[in-house]
Amino acid sequence: MNKVGYYVNDEDKGCFRIFAPYCDTLAVELDRTHRIIELQKQNDGYFTAVTDKLPEGILYWLVKNGREYLPDPYSKYQPFDVHSTSMICYPHKADISKWHGVDPKDAVIYELHLGTFTEEGTLKGATKRLSYLKTLGINVIELMPVAAFPGERNWGYDGTYMFALNMGYGNYRDLEDFLNLAHSLGIAVILDVVYNHFGPEGNYSGMLAPFTRNADTPWGAAINFDGENSHGIREFYLANAEYWLSEVGFDGFRMDAASLIIDNSPSHILTEINKLAKDIEQREHRRIIMIAEHLRNSSKVTCKDGLGFDAQWCDDLNYSLYANLTHEDFRHYKDFGSIDDIYKALNNGFVYDGTRLNSVYNVYQGEDGSSIPPEQLVVHIQNHDQVGNRPHGDRMSTSYGIDKALLAATVCFASPYVPMIFMGEEYAEMNPFYFFESFNDQWLVDAVREGRKREFSFMPDLEIKEPHDVKTFIDSRLDPDCISDAPHSDVLNFYQSLIALKKSGVIGVHDRNELSINLIKDKNVITITTPKSVTVCNFSESDVKLSDLGIQAKKTLLSSKLNASTDTGTVAGISASIYAL
Image 1 (cartoon, rainbow, N blue to C red):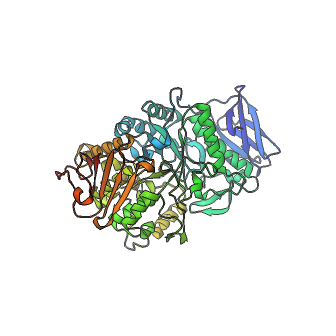
Image 2 (cartoon, one colour):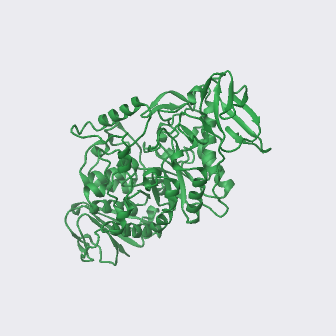
Image 3 (cartoon, rainbow, N blue to C red):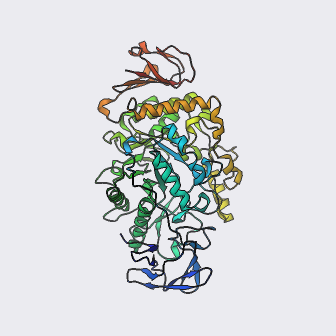
């Protein structure tokens, strides 16, 4: 495919190719020497130039119409901020010579935010903890977005330079080291990418071309994939996918809010991106994992003749477990709560299947998901949204106790779906994960604060944690030092065992023909049986005897009731036990 932005061609020459139909003239000015490189306008809206290969570290501006200076939306690195000079940068590709990737159906996913995962908040800091994740049993890391965003701290969904590694996380050598060590440990690394909108500060792409369209997402204008001059926008995002997957060496994407990527073209941009991922997979002989956050409960997301993703996030099991165990009734939890919902989610994948009103959007959402292969659905009890968009940024184990959190986790891992955990969940992290930002524009800072207040207006006495305050960010950092103390050490041991049972096929097999899920409603119990085990999930407050469930006592492989000296023939209230068959 054609290269875009600044790149080096086969003759070792530096090249610029920038889509800018809004410009009459376009040039590059090198910041220190003020050397001007004039770009030539092409008939298709691109401006191009071939020059000498520029040294890494050179700072430059784009100059529109001879007078307007702006950073390069195609920039590979913004060393100062989103409003300042761009920098010539050459990414270092991860070593894939002995790496073949991870099959999506075998994934145990760990979602993490680089800024709060360690005290350093950098790639170097995260690299030091990769051996810990290997010991835990993780084989896929999902990095929250790393594209350059305004200020020093952000979740990452306000990125404005799609090709640029956020300066606060480190440089491309750090990223290469992170990927190489992860691969040497058998861990794939997928990147969360935001292709549905730009962040609200530092986006200069609209000065060059119609990158956005007259349609809104909850976070800003949608991307123009099908309107006038959209050919250059489509190529921008296809080149971006090629960049992160092939030039840098990530092992796949988690696609943020894919349902809000609007495209009425004959071939949807997401289909094109997934075809590109398959091409890279075949070309480089390694597995590429493509996961969508679609959240409309549609089988087309993973169909080969649809969008073609390997898997999609499925929140319905989360909603079902959370509403049942906590009795919370705000947002989607209002539509759930019965143990029947948990049973339906385990059997059919989708609870919002077109027969239930989604009261948040006031629509009968979704379709029957029972025909979707279970390995194409990713489930969880926590993720960045389900924690960070809570009024207090609290985790289930902190607010409702370890017993309920581990029961819910056991259901996720014993389900036929692909499990994902959110950083810190595996040892019952006590610190919250708040929403935070560091916008420079005071209007934006105020708007975010007021938006959060409106979002939680159902709690009129709630004091909103200030998103712009650096302390909010600091308070969101993990505290892994607590792992050495009980009960955190016990929770970590439990997760290690749970992951091992999933990976070995003792629990959570994907083939529904080898899985039996039963609801004993009068006991408030769900059992999940595979050829090797039976998992008994007791949602009642009372203990239940296996004999009352028609199950003969078996060897206990794992119990979510930590350090409890209960009879092997009894499952304690609000707990799950796994027995060998």
